[in-house]
Length: 513
Image 1 (cartoon, helix red, strand yellow):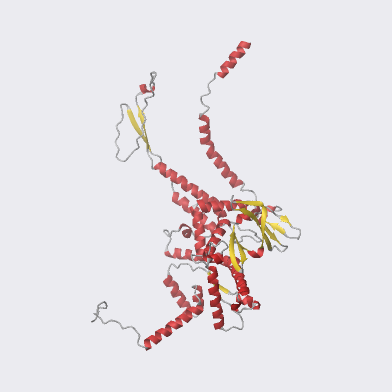
Image 2: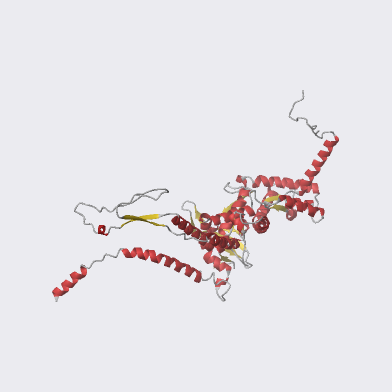
């Protein structure tokens, strides 16, 4: 019995296990698509339950937009930043929004005080002085920004980029040596996981302290370590709300933080990128031709090697080149493999995804793609008008939430430290009046647009002042310059300064000696 048991153990140990190494490759090749499909199905079915149930459940905290922001804002912000850095559509959309909202020169602020008791000439003189002093401050990087890296135009471009990317932008207004200086604070420093009630009756929600009327009181920013590039979530810098300009476009009532623009289209943008990558691989495979050589002699399958000999199987490393001719050995045949194209109708699929992405970003497809190949002139002009309306709406938010508070603080500082203005604080509300001139969109047909303005002027439906203002100019200065030019031309004609036209047939380039 013992011998039999010993024999059985030896027999079990002697069993070969040759196919253990082949299983992992098959498992890896088969299960990877299954796991990917499983994750996609879970994303469709589950979708982080509070998001998909928003607005359709009752009695849960998931219905509140601020609760979604609390738990998912960090992930949304990271996904948006990745899309801007890695996805060409994300980068294009960010630059498109900056060009449309801010432009190359930014929104221009032109002081226009309306103080009672002053004549038009006095108001004009005061406006010019304020405009001159504001330009000296705004377009000097050392005076304007805290770190000396931005002027007023670059500041606006940066602010809009951050808003598109992070959904919001925080600007702090400093008063350094009786001078206003601006600083942009990273939105990631304002964590949204320290919600609590305070002893004074206020509460902290998503990193912002509110009073009982839901008015911001303080902002709790994490301490930043410039050496390790990390944020300390346990230590905060409390900044009063009066020093912060919180720039974001709310989408829901009572929304406390901004949501990135590309969140609604992030999955579609990623699908489009993955599809184009797969189509590129398919095109590369279909453009490649593979050949292998077969041996028709069955006897050559069994070859006995003598000691010291190696396998003499032929190895071919030649590439198939155009016009190449190869000679095969005896009993050999060549066969080719031509892969089929696996990315049919890529244009239709890509166009459909681009339509969805453009709708989600609230921009036109031709603007997002930067191409008008398939658009007629009328369609392109209509799309340009619609796009300009969208950007003008965003420009109004930028003016209301950022530019007006900045100009107000600068005006306070000037009135306190510059006695030459001769402006009383009782007239402050009238003194801070200004015109905010946004970027003018490029016209597809400027001649017809000017003709339309002239027709409105002739019909009495518009004034010259209104037309000049819409074109971004100062009506008073423009009209004065036109009057001076007319007066100069009249004096020139009466004094005989009118240039004499050369006689017909005369050579204007010849010198008469």
